Length: 320
Length: 217
Image (spheres, rainbow over the protein chains, first blue to last red):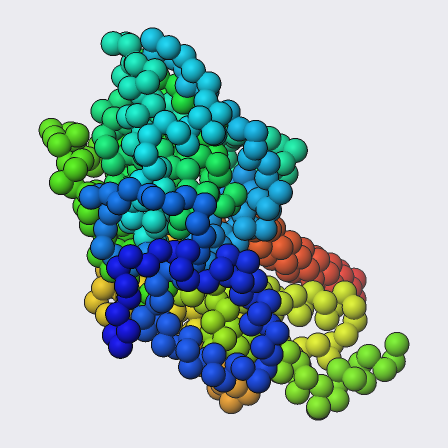
C-alpha cells in the first residue's frame, strides 16, 4: 500500500453520508464518458475490495472491543444492499427499498418472563445502559456468504443483569416487530411472523452476544434491523434477530422461526460449523462479499476460543 | 394480418431476434464492467444466467403451441436459435458454478454433483441440453432422420423439468417464482399431451374408418 491509513481515522473522516448514499446518482451523472475509467477501477476492486468507505458520527467515543477482528470490514454499500429481512421482501435488494419508511421511533423493548424485575426500555434508555462498544465481527449467513461488520452495542448480559433472571430461566426468547401495514411484502416470505428467535441462557450471557444499536459509527439503517437487533457472531445470521420488541426469559427452549419453517434444515443452535452441512448445500466454504472465490468457513465462525466450551460433550451433528 | 407471416418468413427477421436474445448477456457484461452487479457479484451472475436459461427454455417450448394456436407455422424458423440461446445461457450458468464456486476443480465439482441433489438435478438439466445443441444442425436432422431426431429432442422436456426442480430446491422459503416456472412448464407440457391425444384419437378414428370401409367392400 502506498498510503498508510492513520489508525485514529474514524468512519466520519471519510465520505459524508449524504454523498455516500447518493453515490449511484453521482455515478449515473458521470455518464458514459466516465465508464472506461471506472471499469478499470472496478476490476481493481474485484481484486482487492476497498475498505468500508463511510461515514457518520452519531456515536463518538466508542469503546474498542478486544473481540473485534482485524479483518477488513465490508463496505456500507454491501451491508445495506444485501439483506435477508423477509418482512421487507425476499430479494436481498428489497429491504433497502421497502424499509425506507419503516417507523423505528418511538420504540420500546419489553423485557419480561422469568425475571425479578420486568422492564420496558425506550431506545433512549437502552443507549444509556452501558458504554457503547464498536465490535468488528465476522457474520456468516447459512446461505454460504459472509461479511465483516463494525457493529455498535454492548453485551446482552447488561440487560440480563438489570432484570435479574430467576433460577427458572433457562432460555431467552426474542421477538421482532411485525406490522403488516408497514410490511406488506412479508406475506410472500413463506415463513411465519412475527419473527422469533432464541438462545440458551448461557449463550445469551456470553460476552460475545451483542445487543446491537448501530454500525459504521451510526445508528442501524432500517434494512439492517433498526433500531435494535441481536448479533451472535458464532451462529448463522438468521439467529441474529432484527428490530426486536420483546426479550423474554423462559424455562423451555423457545420456538424459532426458521426451525418452525423447516426443522430438518434449521436447528435451534445453528452454530456456524464447516463440518455439518446444510441438507442441500455444503457449509465448508463461504463467499465473502466482494470476493470471487470461496474461502474456508471456520468452526464457530472463528470464535471457538470464546464459545466452544458452551458445547462440550454435545453432538453438534445432532444439535445442528 | 397477412403481413405477419410475411415478416416472420423474411430472412432478415432473425437478425433483430438474435440481437434481442443477446441483450441479457450484454447487460451482464455492462454491469460487470461498471461495477453494478451488487454486493454479491458472483451470485448475481449465477442467478441471472440461471433465470435466462429457464426463460429461453420456456420460450423454446412455447414455439410449437403458438405455431398451432396462432396458425403461424413460420415461427418454427426461430426455434433452433432460441433453443441454442437457452444452451448458451446454460453454459454461462455452468461456468459461474465451475469457476467461482469450484475453482475450476473438476474433481471437487464431481463430488459436489454427486452429493447435492440440487446440483445433481441442475447438472442433469445442463448435460441433457448438450446432445440437443450438437444435433441442432440440418445435417444432423438428416443423419438421424426426422422421427429419431424429434425423439431425441424431447429431452428438452426432462431438462426443463430438472431446471425447475433445481430452482425450487435452491430457494429457502420463497417458492413463488420457482412454482411460477413450474406452472408454466406444466401447462406447456400438458398442451403437448392434449395435442398428442387428440391427434392419436383422430388417427385411430381414421384407421377404423378405413378398416370398416375396406370391410364393406
